[in-house]
Image (cartoon, rainbow, N blue to C red; front, side, top):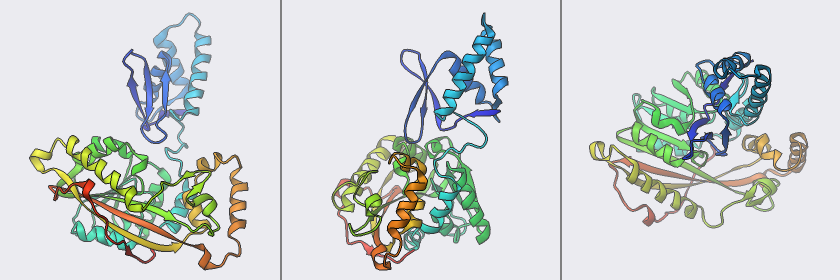
Amino acid sequence: MKLTSSPNFALCVATGGDAYVMREVEPYTQFWLSGAERMLFTLFAAQGGMDEGEAIEALVRMEAPAGPDARRAEARKAITEMRRAGVLLAPTDDLSRYDRSIAQHYREHRPFPRAVAARIGTIAALGQRTRVLDLASGPGSLALELAAVSNAVSIMELSAAFIAIATEEAARRNATLTAIHESCNRLAHHDGRYDAITISQAIHWLDEVALVRGVCRTLADDGRFFIVQGALNLPQSHPLAYILGDRTPLGDKAPGPFADQIRPLYARLAHLFAGLDPQAGKRGAIRPAGIDLFRQPRRIDEGFARAFLSDEHISGLGMSSDHFWRDLSRRCAGVPPERMMGVQEWALIQFARDGNGHAAEAWVPGVAETIAYP
């Protein structure tokens, strides 16, 4: 079987000389490599990957061990462990936890709010030739709203399933959408130049330092960078509060107002841009440019949950996926529509090259604008 080294993992060397690979997306796991495993990782990194048997034979030829059969058995065991850790991938393996089913539910039940997309278009002065890059695009909900105006919209996304759903929907809408199948942590190695860069509900999956370096490299003169953050509020009486509410087996939400959750991210990114932008003196510094807040009442039902919870989430609950979804469906059955309502809060965080430069820590939130669904 042909395998390839996962692009999610970068080869690193510790101070003492030991090699390991570091996963560049959450969870940021490390996998320490023996000498043979390091060679295997390099062999499988060849363009198009390599057949497992060919890689083992190449390793044996390079090492010329006294017991080649024993070495082959050790190499096969190492390959099995590297596959189990996700360091090596088969052609059918996805780089993301999101498969086609969850991607489809995401597109149908978690559409990007049109009012927020329209605000981005207005601030960015979006036109037919405006170059836009939507990072960690998911099924392309935001990108496709922007592609209704611009013919130069690109998405960068790790999940093959999300890219497939986004490009299929673009074709259905007769919209122009360029897909880049890549981790957004690698943006700093990308040669594009964009007038507007967006990322929605995904910055927590990325390395903020790598992201900021990438934006500094690719954001055009007078360009704008938009971060969209969301928070879901459900009353305790909601049937899905047990799994999507403030206190759940998946973890507790941060206490306090939504604006207080946004402020530290805003300040942190401002400091990172100030410290990491090598183009600041030549092309203008990337500075804070404000935050808009929105409040969106919407239905939160089983479809939303299926667009939100992956098998990895469910596996930590100690039950099978089938049992989990049967139980969730039972909780929602026959519930009146008004009890299925929740509120999605949104923050549109803005940075601009050569922006106004106000102190991010001093931001004072205004009243959130109530918007329609979607």
